[in-house]
Amino acid sequence: MNPLSFFIVCFLYFFSFILFYITYLAKQKSEKRAFINNLANSIIFISSITINLSIIHIINPKNTRFIAFPFDVLFLLFIIFFIPLFFILVIREKRKIERGKKNLEEIKSRLKILPLKYDIYRKLTHLVVLGIIFFYFTLGFLVQNVFRYLSEFLPNFFVEMFELGDDIMIFTQNLVVFLVGVSLIGLLTADFTKILIPKYYPLKAVNQILKEKELHMRLGPHISMSIGCFSIILLYGLIQPIGPLIICTSMAMGVIGDTASNLFGRTFGKRKIRDTNKTYEGLFAGVIVAFISGVVVLLTLRGFYIPKHFGLILMPVLGALVIGIIDYLDLEIDDNLSFNFIVSTVLFFSSILLF
Image 1: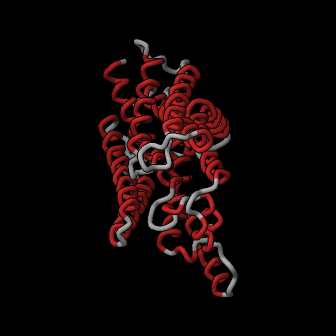
Image 2: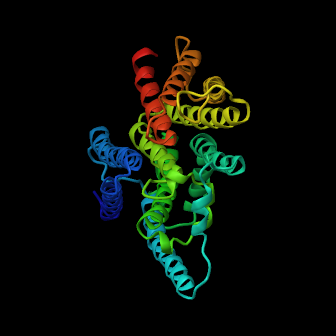
Image 3: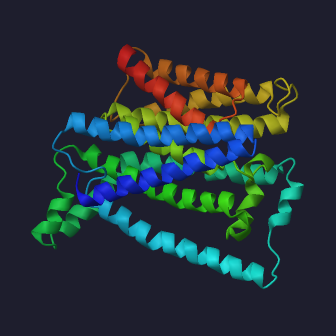
């Protein structure tokens, strides 16, 4: 493994260590829900990195990079600039508090039930998943063309960075790993600060869209979403073209189905599922919308891969049923993680076995 990739992998493992430490703190403070959710995130995060390295070695033993050039360079530059910048924001927040300026900690006392307005804001942030799909199958190709155009004006050393062979999906895979990876590093850095030193957390206004249980030792839903996306991209994205197709389909079904379930259930739901805040109306709405979104994604991307033997219908049906079961069970693990990881895993292996 080259030095840059080695540093990036070590940095990701260092963050996974902090994840396990936060999980340990949640157990020490008897926050059972936070412990279970954090543990699931930690295990999936570190497992996906380790398995990805193993898969790369099996597919191409000569491959010495975790993230192909030029993105490992850009990844490293992001770390070098972002971490100190965020640290400066923390120091600035600390000085504000020391000068007696009012902070936003008091919002914790009024978030017993998250207002619908803020719940909508939460769901809108999930639409970033659609951006991942565009980068996989549309914008990624444009970015590659831009890089190749620029390489004509650069020395041979830089031209080699953009030489990716005939498989254009390799470039988009590396691009998506980079984009999701740097987003995850940024979000984890912020959440680590929120959990470990909440007093000096510089983004307290973000707490307004968090539920009460997410304001203490529990990782935020954006972290679960990021780890869920990052893990399935590392695990299945290397298997072209079915991997990216399954990833995009499962992410779209999970995000859109969850959004429909939540908003429809809060607006029209009447029959509660056990003692939870979820309703059967919301559950069925989520399953139906998830199925429709899965079919739409597969139809949109049929130019890259067409599932055989009625896979165009069976895969969305299977994914929607899995989403419905997870939603009904109401696990302690954040839906943003369980939907992405479980649905993509089920669809990936079933597509190999059935289609």
